[in-house]
Amino acid sequence: MPTRLKSMSKNVDPVLDLCDVTHTFASAGQCQTVLRSISFHIMPAEFILLSGPSGCGKTTLLTLIGGMRSIQRGSVKLFGQELYEANSNQRNKLRSMIGMVFQAHHLISFMTAEENVVLAMDASVHEPKSMYSKKNQARQLLTELGLGDKIHAKPKHLSGGQCQRVAIARALACQPRLLIADEPTASLDAENGRLIMELLRKLADERGLSILMTSHDQRLYSYVDRIIQIDDGRLL
Image (cartoon, rainbow, N blue to C red):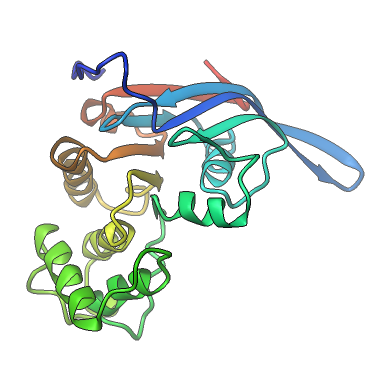
């Protein structure tokens, strides 16, 4: 179990605050509750692992936090803003402060690593940047993540771990305050999985980035500040 502790001021607000979040899916005339009264928070620079078996509700919870599903019951506050009450412009602004990484890297196959990262900046709601500035930032990110020699490589010429690092660079391109990672090491071998976890740990420590990651792999526990366990839609 992790022993790492962070000293946080009592006056610092959570990056994410969930209270009594409940979510139900309706199918073929039947309702299935997949999240049941979920409550927890994440502080700035905190690295949290949401652990639990497949199908326990982890991914559904991430899609609610990321604004990809409507909140049915309960409260989800991002950076102090209630997500349920946010209008379209406010939601877009909140989403721009969240980076997302998935189990599959979802890179555009015909684009280089640099182009994949620049594409994320093109979709940003932040102040538009020149192409030169965007390319320069993309190269800096890729170099920082150990891919300085892979800037012009396409996904088919990269390993699984390298593709996942490009996906992380893409998620960081708009300088988010919260990174959501859904099973980012599940499709990687042990060595690449370890490298990705070391990278995420470094981002939390050096950039002050808050990270919420899902996994059911207990080998990852030592990298995080706190573990939240979920099963059958409930916190344990």
